[in-house]
Length: 113
Length: 113
Image 1 (cartoon, each protein chain N blue to C red):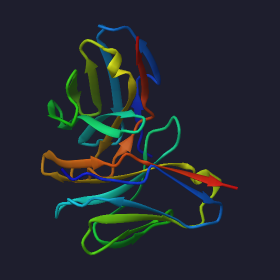
Image 2: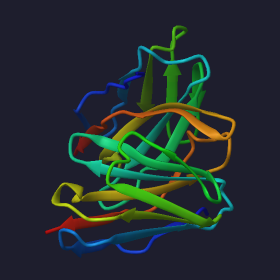
Image 3: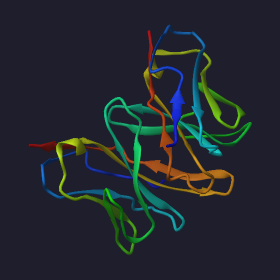
Image 4: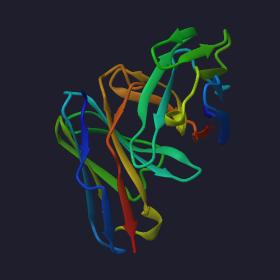
């Protein structure tokens, strides 16, 4: 099984860069890596997705090393509103069937003033 | 904006009752998912559907069934609710081939007494 492992919690201060790492040692060739953000009383929200190397959007960056056995979500200059639970997802879809889909257990990020 | 709606935000049922949780998406997505979310366990997939009347078991299908009669609607059924099914239930949808980029509803907090 391709388990995904992430830290249970992290703390940061406003304005700092935060890096959250997810370990996925058994990632398969066709698996993509996706990160989600979840606020209390809401469903998770897609942040970023990648396959290898580096992906950047207006919200975050995703770093994936060559062996793809881990990935790091980077949040630049966090604010109080970035306090949330962050999930990594490893999975792929094979035609009309699901294939593999593994969510991590989530990392509670708390940003302090 | 993609919208995924769930029939109830909060639900209280008695042990042994039949429970229906409904989910509707408005983006013409082929894939729909049902998860349960419990503290410390993250998101666990109950069932996945890739088309009308098509379904695939996830990691924890025991005690649940699903129905997808229309593309936009995916129902989760608890045939005989038990206290260990008290949980947050999340519905999601995505396009074929984009299982990593899911759009989630707000969730239903189900309490079975």
